[in-house]
Image (cartoon, rainbow, N blue to C red; front, side):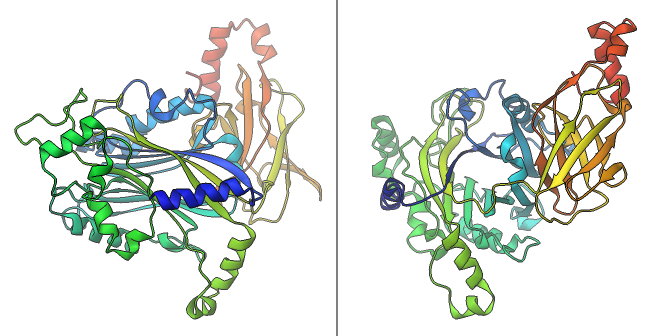
Length: 477
C-alpha cells in the first residue's frame, strides 16, 4: 500500500501532467437499520473550505422492512432525504442512486459539473441466500466524467470469521455478473477507474482478543495488518491484487456497542475488525494484447495516452463521532487529476428577457456540437439549490414548444401560467431523453415576483400559497 502511494505522490510532484484536479469524497457506512442522525456535517466534512466536486455515499443495512421498503420505492428513503437536503443548499445535485434492499448508493456532483456527466447507468445483483434475497450483494453506478469512465461498486459481503474465501467468491461473482449497455465499457473491469467499497466483512484472524485490543489502545495498528483477511487474500487472488488501498491507520470500525465508542461487550465479544473499506483500481496501462487489438481496444489505449487520468488518496479514516450503529463510518478523500475530453456542454441555454408570472417567457438554446436530439427532450426550470432532476418547478417540451429556430439558436416558449408567482433565483436545464442526462445548464437568473399578484393585494404569504396552486405541488416549503 505504501509503495503505490509513494509512486502516485511522486507523479503529482513531478508536474508532468497537464490536467484539471477534482476532489472526490467517499463514505461507506453500515447503518444497522437505524434512522439517520440529525447532522452529517462532520461525515461530509462540510466545514472544509476545499469542498469536493463529487460525493459518493454507500450505505449497508438501510432498514428495509416491508412497509418501509414499499414507501421507499415511491419516495426517497430517510437517508437519501437527509443527504439531499444537506447537500442541495450547497449546490450539489443527486445525479444517480440505486437501492437493493439494505444496500444504497448515492452519487452527487456540484452543479457546474452536471452537463459533463453522461453515460449514467445503475444496476445491482444479489448474493445473499442463494441470490434470492437482497441482504447481501452489490449496487453499482457507472458514468462518464468529462469523458472518463468511472464505476462505483458498493458491496455487502458474507459475514463471519471463517468465510474469507466465500467473500472473495462473492466479489468475483459480482464483478462478472454486473453488466452495462455499452460498447466501450460493458463490464466493471472495462472502466478506467473503479471504486470498490462497502461492508466487505473481512476480519482479523489468528490474533487473540487481548492482543487486538492492546494494539488498538496503543494505536499500533500496523501489527494487525498482516492478519487482516483482505490483505492476506490479496497475496493469492489476482483480481484483488489489481485494487489498491490506503494504509489502515485508523482503528477497526466493527463491532461497537450502540451509542458508544466501546467495542462489543456482549456475551459474544466479537473481535474488532476493519470490515468497512474503500479500494480502487486504475485500469492497467499495459500494451494491448493481440486479442485486444482484434477487438478494437487499441483505440482505447491511444485515448488513455492522450487523455490520462491519475488518482491520489488524500485521506482514509473512520469517523468516531457517530455511534448510532455498531459500525463506524469510513471516509476516503481523493484527488482525481485528468485531462478533459471536452470542456463545453452539448447545449448552451439561457432565459431570454425578464421572467415573471405576468408574461409568457422564452428560453434560448444553442447546440455546441451534434447530439442525438429527440421530441422527448425537455427544458426544466429549477430553483437554485435543487436536489435532483425530479425537483423541476415546470418543464417545456423542446420540439412541441419551439417558437423560432435558425442556424445560431432556437427559441422555446414557456407559458406564464407555469412560472412561479413568487419568483426566486432559478436555472434552466436541458435534458436529453436519448442520452438520459442533463446536457446543459444555464447561468442562474432571477424570476421576478408577479406584479399583478402584488397589485391585487396578495401579501407575500398569500403569494406563497398561490404558487402552490399554480404549480400544483409544494415545491416551495
